Amino acid sequence: MSATRSAPVFAINHMVTPALRPQAFFQLARSLGLQDVEIRNDLAGNAIVDGTPAADIRAQAAETGVKIATINALQRFNEWTPEREKEAIELADYARDAGAAALVLVPVNDGTGRQDGERQNNLRKALTALLPVLNERGLKGFVEPLGFEICSLRSKREAVEAIEAIGGQDTFRIVHDTFHHHLAGEPELFPQWTGLVHISGVTDVAVSIGDMRDSHRVLVNAQDRLGNIAQIRKLLAEGYTGLFSFEPFAEEVHQLENPAAALSQSIVLIKSQLQA
Image (cartoon, rainbow, N blue to C red; front, side, top):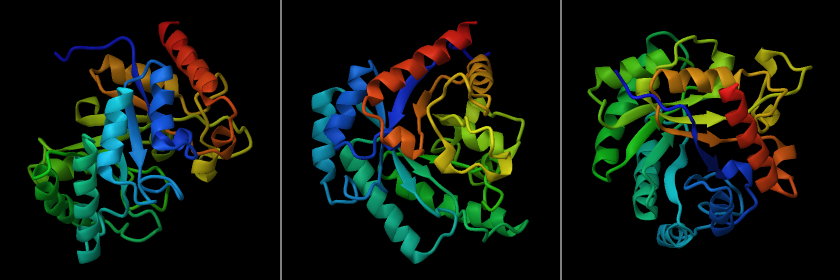
């Protein structure tokens, strides 16, 4: 039987404060008593996009005392082309040199590649190609199904089946995103297959589940509609021992004058509700 953990271990994704430079972002994590962060390759005007060398990121993380859990993300990973392969190798090199442990893999999310048979084949082809890229650099690959109806990979079960089919159990895990789990409506959690959990809440009472988008994603609070507490409680009870990483996309979070206070408040709320 897997060991269970009663309290979650939190991390923060750079999407919490996309305007902060990496070192300030790392310092934010430490000010909250956190040791783990996720960095991103999609923040305009910030590292990694601005050409900041991976060695600089590694040095700043070491100086601040944080560990880089992931680089988020290789987009459209399950549309494997020569261009994608080149992109994957460059990002994996950067992840290795920055000291990151894993690369998040995000599927095509534009309505293409969704046909039954096609999407499973595309997924297995991509995972097969990524296996040596990741293994040669000592990285894990975290596959993140998205709950949007137009996504080419919505099901965690399909992701797990593909990983098993290509013999990738030692390299690949899945991301459980509380927002996407709620949207997808897939009841199973797969805690033993989960390498990372992304957490965010939705509080807008006017938006339907089918119309929820990243822009609705705020920090988890008492008005959350996604059932974050129930999801976290069940993941912990079923043996998940990894990180719970805050990943809000809402502009109102990005504009917070005191993100540390807001994050601290969310952490306290989650812990207290888990104990209730």
